[in-house]
Amino acid sequence: MANVGATSGQSLSRERWTQLIAGVICMTLIANLQYGWTLFVGPIHTAHGWDVASIQLAFSIFIALETWLTPLEGWIVDRLGAQRGPKLMVAIGGVFIALGWIVESKADTLPMLYLGSILAGIGGGAVYATAVGQAVKWFPDRRGLAVGLTAAGFGAGAALTVVPIRAVIDSSGYESAFFWFGLAQGAIVFMLAWLLRAPEPDEIKTMSKMAPPKVMQSARSYTPGEMLASPVFWILYVMFILVSASGLMATAQIALIANDYHVANTAILFGATALSVALIVDNVANGAARPLFGLLSDHIGREYTMAIAFGLGAASYWLLGSMGSVPWAFVLFAALIFLTWGEIFSLFPSTCADSFGPKFATVNLSLLYTAKGASAFLVPVANMIKTSTGSWHMVFAITAFMNLLVVAMALFVLKPVRSKAVQTESRKLARAV
Image (cartoon, rainbow, N blue to C red; front, side, top):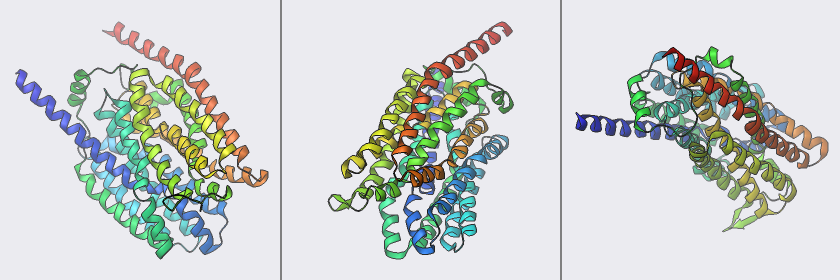
């Protein structure tokens, strides 16, 4: 019997890593939907003469649809069950991903550009919600690391294609880049979808016994309704909005910021420009932050890790605003912003699953993820502030303050409230037994 149990455990371990790898690849393939967008803004403006704020509205629409529909998509995944839910949702996501960029490649009006963003947002959200839900379910003992690796695919994936996309834009136009990259990425996601499944309830119990977690976790799973009635959820939601908005203001504008600082076309490394180097380094830093801080949070706790990351983030925004006109300083401090922002997509899902359990994790995480959609509409505000003040300094001062506010909330609001909620729930279960 001992040998059978060991074999079963080894098989389960292999299966969960297989599922994680498949999810990471899917996330890598949708990364350009967000992080490659900055490469298209200038060419679209040049080709059609539309003002930048109107073009950036397409980005806001994409982020909103990518996030606000995820509760429905997550509910469908959980409702269809472990075997069917992840497969069908990611397959549908692959189709919409391809359609979105193909439509944007043909867009000759702003409404058509917005339609492409709607389709891409639906597809990206379907893949994102499913992959993150898979990670928290398959790895109750290493939730921060697993979600971090999954989110790293989304954060760092664009680094693989920044140079090829920019080359296609330069040689064949942004329309060709939209069409061919959209088609290829959507097709591969569609094929990978059929490998996916979620763990069955008995498998979740087995994995929890294999290696008990080191961080504070709820003793039971909360339904979406119960979660929405909890103060912990709304504290996390406000924190998510503040940090996400600050990061999106920078990540969606990085090419424009480089141009305004007059460093975009300055050669700094083997003929590569500051913008090209920054885009590669930024995406790598963004991806590396997620497993790095996720792993750290598995050991020292979510809130302490948030304080470290967002405190460094505040300093990074301030330094970019002060020294960004120096090419190498622009690359360094932009990378630090990506490094200290990207981990929200490992820390917040992990904290949510720790607080509300794994059973309804896909839909619960998706409800929290809608905060990113709300924050996206602050991106054009950054352009307005820059236009009214004539520089990016005020934008970076505001984003630095937002990060410091979240540091205080993590340590002095979230930690005590979450600790009290978990202890109260444990006492209730103990009395029931």
